[in-house]
Image (cartoon, rainbow, N blue to C red; front, side, top):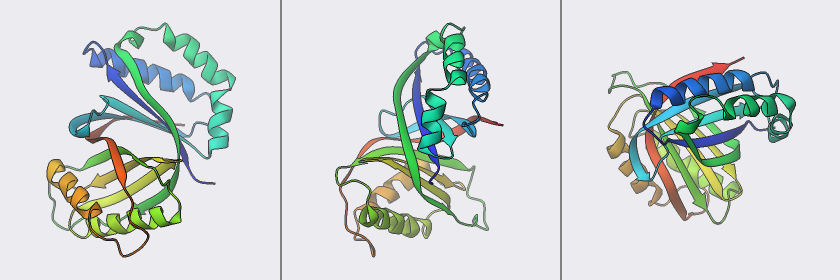
Amino acid sequence: MPLAINLVCTRCTDQNHIALRRWYADHVHLLLAAPELRQATLYRCRQPLAGQPPDYFCMYEFASLDDFLAFEHGEPKARATELTNAAAGRSSIEIVQRTQYERWLHRKWPAPAKKQGDAWRLAACFENEAGWQLDAQRWLADHLQALQGCTPLMGAQVFSSEGQAFMVLDFAGGDAAVIWQLLQDQLALPALYGQAQSIQIRWAANAVQWQAWAR
């Protein structure tokens, strides 16, 4: 079964980012008591590229959606929620998106021989009314392969849930705004494989990993 994630996007309501991060550290520590949760990674969106990105997003990873459902209704999750909802720092957090996805694409490429700056991650949420069947998957995968030929793209993951999708692209440097424009230009070109799709971007951002937790 494909890897599943629970994507939780948040805003910092009072600019107290230290309190928010301390709350997350405690919250995820408690959630890891659930055997279904494999790991969690918190990112800070540092440069908006499209729409209105959240301040943070956290990717909670599970072996499958069945494992997520067991986690969601299990005692460790209920206990963690009870303890941390009343904890210091919770008032600094507003949840603006919570979506479960399954991964259908995972690619890695070698890093370029010449360093082009600091590594960074492009995160984007978007929609495709036609859904993410085989034709749409081939179309997007081909465009990402073409993008890798002209940018320092090192990795790509795409997750979907019906018509919604979440994509994370890892770059070994480069200007985020320039690369985002290159991606949009690439998606407007004909693909060699699959059928052309019409997607709507909800948000996109240059993101940096802030903390990771694993069992």
